[in-house]
Image (tube, rainbow, N blue to C red; front, top):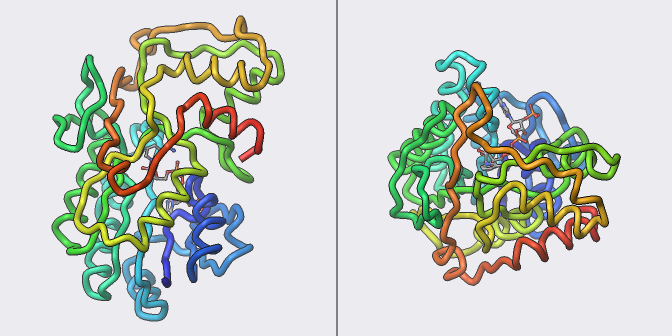
Length: 294
Ligand SMILES: NC(=O)c1ccc[n+]([C@@H]2O[C@H](COP(=O)([O-])OP(=O)(O)OC[C@H]3O[C@@H](n4cnc5c(N)ncnc54)[C@H](OP(=O)(O)O)[C@@H]3O)[C@@H](O)[C@H]2O)c1
């Protein structure tokens, strides 16, 4: 298949470059930081430029588009004008969905678990109540709606916290926590914020498989198997890496001033598993990440 990837230089995107290029004909896009994109057919493009995007579609004619590019951090979104966040996270997504419609391309869009309402019991299924609390989450939900309105062949992946090491310039909380623990530094971690984390490597493998699967017009929870707190992830890193658990300082997410913290958007992934896409336990995934370095 011919696959166009947006956000090829991102945390997930660089893993997707490795995986998609092994199984498909890949054209990967980056904006400011090439990351590993130079090792693949790649183009530097600002996806808010509709003219360039549309030329790109015309030249490459993708069978499928994996659209991951966005302002992906709630704190960055909160620091930007609302219109700028919408321009990338909603309007560019709408344009991509329209182009996919015109060119008959399947669209896989990575949304977020943060579209769900915080719930005490967690493990929301795809019909769970929605209540995006941050501009980031709101813009991703509006992106979902734009995809549903403008594409007739889409998969929306409500993506959980991604764990694993960032490649090249890319960093996430998991990677930073690992580096701090390895250096013997204390790390403050939420004991009361729960997620269903998914390893980046597994996420890329699953997306590559979904490109060729006859799944159409579905919203799918895209997470790991287990509901765990951030602190538990830290404990797993300590166990797998042989680091001192006393370096972990438990703190409440409610104690953080400023950005809204969402205690529990853990997700039920029965639908994902129903497609034959299975995850191991988070503990095993953390062990594999530290063992393989990826
Ligand atoms: N990471 C997580 O834990 C997590 C959790 C839930 C959902 N998600 C979703 O998963 C997807 C990937 O997240 P991520 O963590 O990999 O994001 P990321 O590392 O922040 O990467 C964002 C990507 O978007 C690109 N980009 C930004 N502005 C652009 C523009 N104007 N034109 C073209 N490209 C632009 C960046 O390119 P440059 O770097 O080259 O500028 C980068 O490749 C996102 O859709 C996100 O909402 C991620």
